[in-house]
Length: 171
Image (tube, rainbow, N blue to C red; front, side):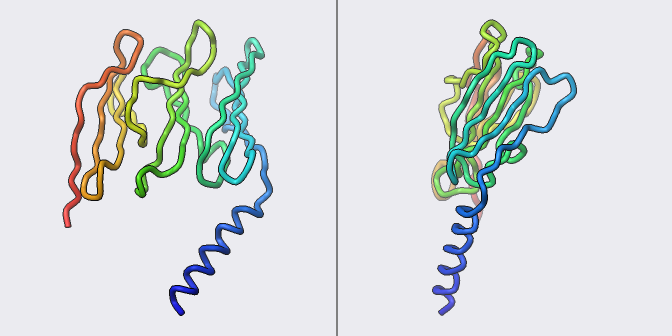
Protein backbone atom coordinates (compact mmCIF):
# COMPACT_ATOMS: atom_id res chain seq x y z
CA UNK A 1 0.00 0.00 0.00
CA UNK A 2 2.85 2.37 0.86
CA UNK A 3 4.47 1.80 -2.56
CA UNK A 4 1.15 2.47 -4.29
CA UNK A 5 0.73 5.74 -2.39
CA UNK A 6 4.27 6.87 -3.31
CA UNK A 7 3.61 5.98 -6.96
CA UNK A 8 0.32 7.92 -7.04
CA UNK A 9 1.91 10.96 -5.37
CA UNK A 10 4.78 10.95 -7.85
CA UNK A 11 2.33 10.81 -10.78
CA UNK A 12 0.35 13.69 -9.28
CA UNK A 13 3.49 15.80 -8.82
CA UNK A 14 4.55 15.24 -12.45
CA UNK A 15 1.01 16.06 -13.55
CA UNK A 16 1.10 19.25 -11.47
CA UNK A 17 4.19 20.42 -13.39
CA UNK A 18 2.58 19.45 -16.69
CA UNK A 19 -0.52 21.54 -15.99
CA UNK A 20 1.43 24.67 -15.02
CA UNK A 21 1.03 27.39 -17.65
CA UNK A 22 4.11 27.96 -19.79
CA UNK A 23 5.02 31.53 -18.91
CA UNK A 24 7.85 33.77 -20.11
CA UNK A 25 10.21 35.10 -17.44
CA UNK A 26 12.90 37.79 -17.54
CA UNK A 27 16.33 37.48 -15.98
CA UNK A 28 16.53 39.84 -13.01
CA UNK A 29 17.94 43.23 -14.04
CA UNK A 30 21.63 43.70 -13.26
CA UNK A 31 23.15 47.18 -12.99
CA UNK A 32 24.86 48.15 -16.26
CA UNK A 33 24.12 44.72 -17.76
CA UNK A 34 24.01 45.27 -21.54
CA UNK A 35 21.59 42.41 -22.33
CA UNK A 36 17.96 41.56 -21.84
CA UNK A 37 17.47 37.84 -21.24
CA UNK A 38 14.06 36.16 -21.48
CA UNK A 39 13.22 32.51 -20.88
CA UNK A 40 10.34 31.02 -22.85
CA UNK A 41 9.29 27.46 -21.94
CA UNK A 42 8.47 25.49 -25.08
CA UNK A 43 7.31 22.38 -23.21
CA UNK A 44 7.60 20.94 -19.71
CA UNK A 45 11.36 20.41 -20.13
CA UNK A 46 12.48 22.41 -23.19
CA UNK A 47 13.08 26.13 -23.05
CA UNK A 48 14.32 28.91 -25.30
CA UNK A 49 16.47 31.79 -24.10
CA UNK A 50 16.18 35.03 -26.04
CA UNK A 51 19.12 37.36 -25.52
CA UNK A 52 18.96 40.91 -26.86
CA UNK A 53 21.96 43.20 -26.90
CA UNK A 54 20.54 46.50 -25.60
CA UNK A 55 23.18 48.53 -27.47
CA UNK A 56 22.80 47.19 -31.02
CA UNK A 57 19.48 45.30 -30.60
CA UNK A 58 21.16 42.16 -32.01
CA UNK A 59 19.16 39.06 -30.97
CA UNK A 60 20.44 35.58 -30.09
CA UNK A 61 18.49 32.43 -29.28
CA UNK A 62 19.68 29.41 -27.30
CA UNK A 63 17.54 26.29 -26.74
CA UNK A 64 18.16 23.85 -23.91
CA UNK A 65 16.44 21.41 -21.53
CA UNK A 66 16.04 21.23 -17.75
CA UNK A 67 13.71 20.22 -14.96
CA UNK A 68 10.94 22.64 -13.97
CA UNK A 69 10.57 25.38 -13.00
CA UNK A 70 11.64 26.82 -16.35
CA UNK A 71 12.18 30.34 -15.07
CA UNK A 72 15.08 32.72 -15.64
CA UNK A 73 16.10 32.93 -11.99
CA UNK A 74 16.17 29.10 -11.72
CA UNK A 75 18.01 28.36 -14.99
CA UNK A 76 20.53 31.17 -15.52
CA UNK A 77 23.67 32.36 -13.76
CA UNK A 78 25.55 35.38 -15.08
CA UNK A 79 29.23 35.62 -14.12
CA UNK A 80 32.41 36.92 -15.68
CA UNK A 81 34.28 33.64 -15.29
CA UNK A 82 37.38 34.53 -17.29
CA UNK A 83 37.62 38.12 -15.97
CA UNK A 84 37.61 39.71 -19.42
CA UNK A 85 35.05 42.32 -18.37
CA UNK A 86 32.20 40.62 -20.25
CA UNK A 87 29.38 38.49 -18.80
CA UNK A 88 29.28 34.73 -19.33
CA UNK A 89 26.19 32.53 -18.99
CA UNK A 90 25.83 29.24 -17.15
CA UNK A 91 22.62 27.35 -18.04
CA UNK A 92 21.24 24.73 -15.68
CA UNK A 93 20.44 21.37 -17.25
CA UNK A 94 19.21 17.98 -16.14
CA UNK A 95 20.80 16.00 -13.29
CA UNK A 96 23.64 13.82 -14.58
CA UNK A 97 24.19 10.10 -13.96
CA UNK A 98 21.42 9.61 -11.38
CA UNK A 99 22.87 12.23 -9.06
CA UNK A 100 21.88 15.55 -7.59
CA UNK A 101 24.46 17.30 -9.79
CA UNK A 102 23.06 19.19 -12.75
CA UNK A 103 24.68 19.22 -16.17
CA UNK A 104 25.45 22.86 -16.94
CA UNK A 105 26.17 24.51 -20.26
CA UNK A 106 28.67 27.37 -20.37
CA UNK A 107 28.33 30.19 -22.89
CA UNK A 108 31.24 32.63 -23.10
CA UNK A 109 30.73 36.12 -24.49
CA UNK A 110 32.67 36.78 -27.69
CA UNK A 111 33.30 40.54 -27.90
CA UNK A 112 34.10 40.38 -31.66
CA UNK A 113 30.72 38.90 -32.62
CA UNK A 114 28.91 40.25 -29.53
CA UNK A 115 27.31 36.80 -29.14
CA UNK A 116 27.45 34.07 -26.48
CA UNK A 117 29.23 30.94 -27.71
CA UNK A 118 29.02 27.53 -26.04
CA UNK A 119 32.47 26.50 -24.85
CA UNK A 120 33.93 23.31 -26.30
CA UNK A 121 36.92 23.21 -23.93
CA UNK A 122 35.09 21.48 -21.05
CA UNK A 123 34.86 17.72 -21.52
CA UNK A 124 32.67 16.62 -18.59
CA UNK A 125 28.99 17.37 -18.10
CA UNK A 126 28.40 18.63 -14.56
CA UNK A 127 27.92 21.69 -12.36
CA UNK A 128 30.23 24.58 -13.16
CA UNK A 129 31.64 26.65 -10.29
CA UNK A 130 34.10 29.55 -10.16
CA UNK A 131 36.83 28.78 -7.64
CA UNK A 132 39.40 31.54 -8.13
CA UNK A 133 40.31 34.26 -10.61
CA UNK A 134 40.12 32.93 -14.18
CA UNK A 135 39.55 29.37 -12.92
CA UNK A 136 36.55 27.07 -12.66
CA UNK A 137 35.82 23.49 -11.77
CA UNK A 138 33.20 21.10 -13.11
CA UNK A 139 31.77 18.73 -10.51
CA UNK A 140 30.34 15.44 -11.75
CA UNK A 141 29.56 11.92 -10.63
CA UNK A 142 32.13 9.42 -11.82
CA UNK A 143 30.43 6.25 -10.52
CA UNK A 144 28.40 5.01 -7.54
CA UNK A 145 31.22 5.70 -5.06
CA UNK A 146 33.07 8.66 -6.54
CA UNK A 147 32.56 12.23 -7.55
CA UNK A 148 35.18 14.23 -9.39
CA UNK A 149 36.06 17.84 -10.06
CA UNK A 150 37.84 18.78 -13.27
CA UNK A 151 39.70 22.07 -12.81
CA UNK A 152 40.26 24.52 -15.67
CA UNK A 153 41.88 27.94 -15.96
CA UNK A 154 41.40 30.52 -18.71
CA UNK A 155 44.60 31.04 -20.72
CA UNK A 156 45.18 32.16 -24.30
CA UNK A 157 41.48 32.56 -25.06
CA UNK A 158 40.32 29.11 -23.92
CA UNK A 159 39.68 26.89 -20.88
CA UNK A 160 42.76 24.76 -20.21
CA UNK A 161 42.46 21.55 -18.18
CA UNK A 162 44.59 21.66 -15.00
CA UNK A 163 43.74 18.58 -12.91
CA UNK A 164 41.06 16.17 -11.70
CA UNK A 165 40.31 15.99 -8.00
CA UNK A 166 38.58 12.78 -6.80
CA UNK A 167 35.99 12.84 -4.02
CA UNK A 168 35.23 9.46 -2.46
CA UNK A 169 31.93 8.79 -0.72
CA UNK A 170 32.44 7.27 2.72
CA UNK A 171 30.00 4.65 3.89
